[in-house]
Image (cartoon, rainbow, N blue to C red; front, top):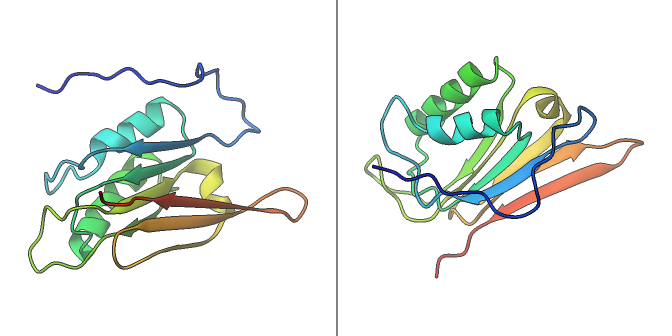
Length: 146
């Protein structure tokens, strides 16, 4: 049985429409259920009204099938507005692979994503978003294996 862990940091205020809410979370491994990949994390993102979620230590072999399943689950939750980027090392078999990162944006914020990328070793992912008045926002999600 998995216990709930209380969030820490600043008090989470009601979401203001004009504000982008970012969150980072060391997930310590996303569950490997083939058809439910990322459902728990995506559900928490929806519940907390997070616009961009950065996940570290995903421990997933982000193969084509894993990416497609994660994207399908995200688009199902967010009415086809999700944008995702994942990074992980290479492995022959599906399932567990140490390290790895992923980022997901949803809703109107996904329309601001102008570029996204990742390294092939599973150390970082990034998204560039269009800001106001011709500015940009670069969000970098990194993980260093100890």
